[in-house]
Image (cartoon, rainbow, N blue to C red):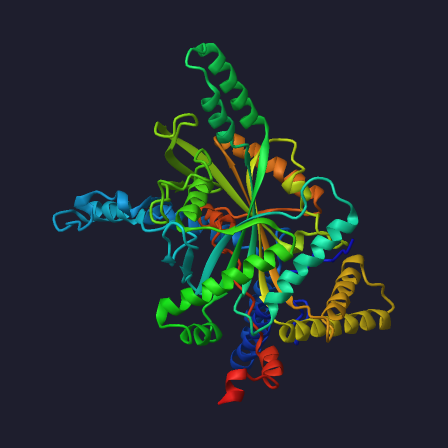
Length: 547
C-alpha cells in the first residue's frame, strides 16, 4: 500500500526565509533596520532602544505548542469581548426580525438605549458566521444546486455538492485499498491542470445515529388494526435503542470552481452571465459524476437546493433528518445560535420521529470545531486510512463531522515549489554535515518528503499538487457531554498520529462552516513573488496564442 509523509510542516521553504515564514523574516529584518536607523539618529540612546525593540520582536516570533504567537491569547480575549459588545456573538435569521425593527426609529432613545438597540439588531443577519457572501445561482428542487460564494479576502467561486458512498465498504485487502487510493489520486490529477475549471474538492464524512425511517415505515405498513399498543411501544423502543447505539456514515463531496478569467472565458462562449455559468457547471457535473465513479465511488449523485439545505439544517440541529428535504430551502435552513468561548449553541424545534407533522419544543445542540494543524501530524509514513481512528475508531457514540479540503495546484507551480523545498533541504543537509552535525528525525523526514514530491511530480507523471486542511466538528446535547466528547476525540486523534487539535475558540460558529458542504475554512495558497516570476517567465495561455 502506498504511503506518504504529510505531517510536521505548515508551508514551503522560502527563497530567503528557509523554514521561517516570509512574514517572520520581514518582521525580523524590519526590526534590525529600525535599530540601525535609531542608532544612527540617536547614538547610544538609539542603541539601547533598538536592543529593547529587538528583544520584543524575538519574543514575539516565538510560538507555543499550538504554533501560536505569545499574544494569541490576548487577541482571542479581545475578539470575544468585541463580539459580546457588538452583539455579533448571537445569530438570528433575518426573517425572524420583528416588523417594527425592520426600519427602527431610534430618534427618541437615549444614547445607552440606542446602543442596546443596535446590539439587539446586530444579531439579525441573512446567514450565519462562516458563510458570509453565500448566495444561490440555482436552488430549485430537481436540479443540481449551484452556490455562489464571495468570502472576504478570497477569490469568488461556485460550488456543487455530491452525495457519495466510499469505495472501501466492509473488509478488503491491501491491494484493493491501494487501487482505491490510486484511483482517487487519478481523480485529483484529472482536475489539477491549469486548463481545468475545477479548483478544489472537499471530502466530508458525517457520523450520525442510524436513521430508523425505513424500519418505521415498514412497521406502519405491517401493523394490524387490532394490534395491542404494548406491541407497538415495544417495537418503537427497539428502534429507539438501535438509533442510540448504532452509528452510520454519510459521505459528501463538494467541488469548487473559482470564478477565474478561464472560467469566465469558457462561460462567455455558452451564454451571458449566470446562464453561461450554469451551462458550464452542468457540463462539469456530468464529468464529475463519471470521474467519481471511475474513482470507485458508488451511489454518486448531485444534490438539489432543498437537499443541500436539509444537510445544512441537520448539521446545525442533528435531531432533524439529514434527508428531509420536502419542507426546506437554502434560505430557510438556518437556526438561531449563540457563541460562547469554546462552543456554539444552536436552538430550534424538531419533528417527531414517528409523526413528521408533529414538532417538539425547542432544544439545544452544542457544537465545537477543531482544526487539524499540519504541524501536529507526526512525521511518519501514513497510508490512506490514517484518519480511521477519528472516523470509526471511537468506541463512544459521538456525533461528528470530519472534512478535508484539497485545493488543486497545477504541476508547473507544484514542481517549482517541490524543487525549491528539495534544494533547501539538500543545502541544509550539507550544511549540517559540514558542521559535523546529524540531522534530527523530523528534518530528515521532511527532506525525504520533499524528495518524494519531486519524484512524484517528475515530467510525464501526470501528477499535480494540492494544499490541504482538515477539520472536525463534534456535537452534543449539553456542554458537559461536549466537554467529554472533546477529550475522547483528542485521544482518538493521538491514535491517528495527530498530537493536538487546535480548537477554534472565540469564533466557533464561523469555524463550524468548515465542516459544512460549502468548502469554507482554508484559503488557497498564493504564489510568492519569486515563484510567480520563475513560473510566469515561461507561461502563456492558449487564448493568447490564438490572438
